[in-house]
Image 1: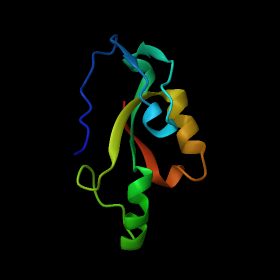
Image 2: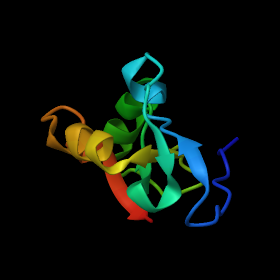
Image 3: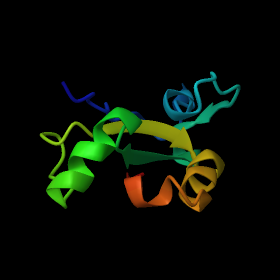
Image 4: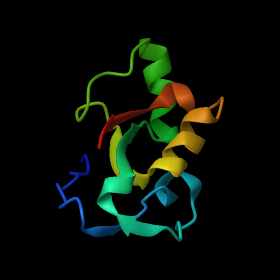
Amino acid sequence: MAKTITTAAKDEHVHCECGVWTGERCAWTGPVSQTVVVEYMPQYLRASHQAARNAGRYPYNGAERVRVERHCAELLLSDEEERDWAQIVGD
C-alpha cells in the first residue's frame, strides 16, 4: 500500500526520510519548508516495470513518496542508476 504524505505546516520541524532508499537514517531535522516530496520506485519493483515498458501511475504502481531535505533529493536525482526511478513531486 502506498504511503501517504501528510501536509505539514511550513514552520513545523520534520525528519528527512531519505533513509528509505539509502538504508540509513538521515540525521537531518529541520523546517518542512526546506524539504520536498520525492516519488521513487523501490528496487524490487523495477524489473517488472521495465518488462512492462512503463512505470504506471502513483499510487497504483507501488511507488513510494517520502519527504526529504532538498540536498538529499538532489543527491538521489544526481545518481545515474536512481534518477530514472525518482522525481520531485511537491514541496
